[in-house]
Image (cartoon, rainbow, N blue to C red; front, side, top):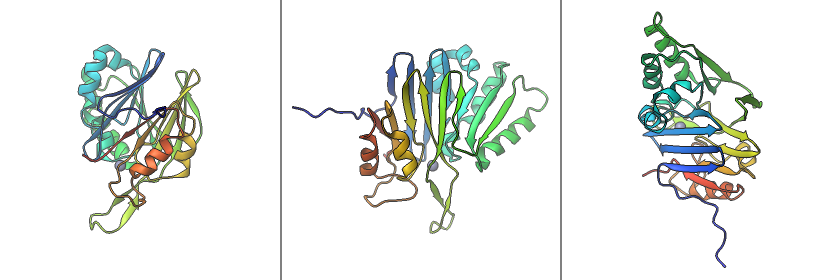
Length: 243
Ligand SMILES: [Zn+2]
C-alpha cells in the first residue's frame, strides 16, 4: 500500500484550507520575495509582506477587504520578507484606510522600525490611519480576532559584508490556532528545538528548506531537516527553496 503522503506540492501559489481557516502562500523564494495571506473566518492577516504583496493581495481581496486588514506579522527584517511594506502602507493611505494597522515583529528588527519612522515622517500630516508597532520580545500567546498567536524564537543569521563572519538576525516563527486547527510557520530558520516543538502535531507546518548543502547550517534548513520536522505535522509544505 502506498504510504500516506502529508507533504503538499510546492508550486506557487500554495493554498491550504480547512473550513474557514486558510492560508495562501503567494511566493517564498529566497532573496526575492515572500508573501502570505492567512484567513480566519472573515478576517485576513498578512504574513511576511515581501515584494509583490500589494499586487497579490489586491488581486486576491480587492480594495475594501485589503483596507480592512489590521494585522501584519513579520518574522524578520530581511528584504525578501518585508520588501513590500512601503508600497502596501502607501496604497492604504491613498485608498483612505481609516482603521488602525498593527505590525508585529521581533524585538531588534531595525528594518521595520526604520520603515515606520521614514513613512510616518514623509506622511506626517496626511496619514488617515494609525500604524502601531507591536514589538515581540517574549514567546507569549496572544489573541487577535479569535486567532491565538504564539510567537517563538528561531535561529537565523546573515553574512557580514566580508562574507566570512555572520551575525544573528532577530527572527520569529508563528503558531496560529483557530477553532482547534493550527498552522505553524517557521519563517527563515536553521534547525531548532523551538520549531520542532511548534510544528509537532500542527495541521499544517510551513517550513523553509533554504540551505542547499546537506550539512547543518545556522541560517537555513536542509531539505532533510525540513522534511524531518514536516513529518511530525499532519501536513506540511516546504518553501524558500533556492531556484
Ligand atoms: Zn532571512
